[in-house]
Image (cartoon, rainbow, N blue to C red; front, side, top):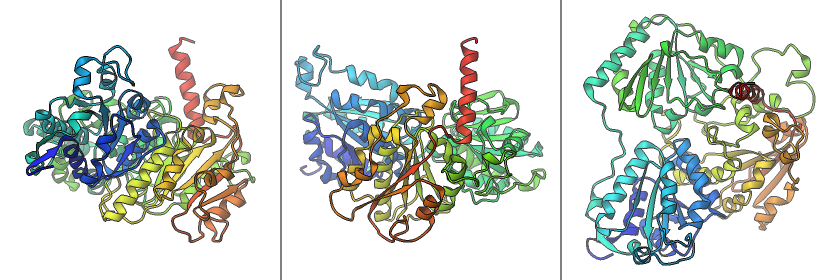
Length: 597
């Protein structure tokens, strides 16, 4: 860089640093190597993952904790290896910046037969593939437009909370441009809604809550993704309305609030939760994503006639839709307008606990009976193990459904992929989340994705729950965790294969079997250094409770810092969480109806 000049590559990375990115995930390749040399100049660190798919999962987890992330791959082979992870980020509203190092502009213009291409001179094919799974993209062929295009794409990524694609030619990355635009900060706030239009919406909302004797709030994934948690908590405290979360919304609301009512998942809800939720006269539904697994096979019973839906690009009141209306500025305008004295008396909220609400009719189903570690027993116990501000990653599978039964202390962040559901996601996600948490702690930053009562970050524990089958897809990313000095606790559910798949279809089919691994040797394989890793095994309830709650060398509470730990939890092959069983049944019935059976 000279004078007021800066290379395009450094400009891009300086902008990412401005948005909070510090660790950049990805895999090196010959079309991005020169670009990677620029990272330290912008104050960024290269993570380096085992493969591009894992890097994408890690960038996803990093963004959910830090607010945005960056993924760098090479052209063709690299970007296509990451495409499933980026599609998952798009599906689940995660702001991820994918930077692809592409061949120089002259080679592209002349259609040279380069490696990593399709051999037909088409350098746009892969970029076209990404158009369906990104909200904005740019190919930085013209250095004169580079700053403008970079700013536009990054602002869109952050504000709309979805992935973007930036193709960076090798020659353009090192070309100098004016640095003047860096003096103006990127726009990260959502624009205000049309005032007159917004007033009409607020008026209708107030009419509904002032006339309802039983109003509830339901919180879903997009409340987290589109950063309305501060406004949401104020809404809960201002109104006192009983508040529920969906599986994808779990962790959005502090579960120690007196207004918290539990997890609503349609027919798979606890009976008292389902009854309380579905009898309400008015539902304020914030950030809804009504996917099959998030609604127990589309068994939500929330009629449009009594619902106000808050979204990032529209509002819906009863059957009327108001486009181009963002929930964040609307809630900021709505909150001071709510007069508590005009809200009719509401039913009280029954607080939840980590125990089953009532004894089962069949003693065999009692989680307090027996010695096997069943899901009915495990997840309430795990809730007792959790501490404030923990970060929990759960795998697509039994863990995603089981975690519903764990009650969270204040500030716990849950990272899961309920909608996209890519098996193996959670291991990479854990690496990205742990790195983001470490960065926030070292910088003394602020918690972005949890409740507003937690202003400053402490050294947060990161915990992963993954199945033995899912682990085999992405296990190598544990080595990246060790190399980065990260020390999450990894719980591996050993139930001999793909239990969630068995429960959905193929109970005894070979395609749901796996080759068992001797997990005792997994961490030493990745971490030859003595004392940097630890393996524990739990084959019954007594052993699990000892590992979770007791102190000593053979427990998780051994007082050792900076040690990555793997706990193998042996569970019955066909045992599943209650919510998963009910969701699988509902989904099977739905599929039969769709097939006309």
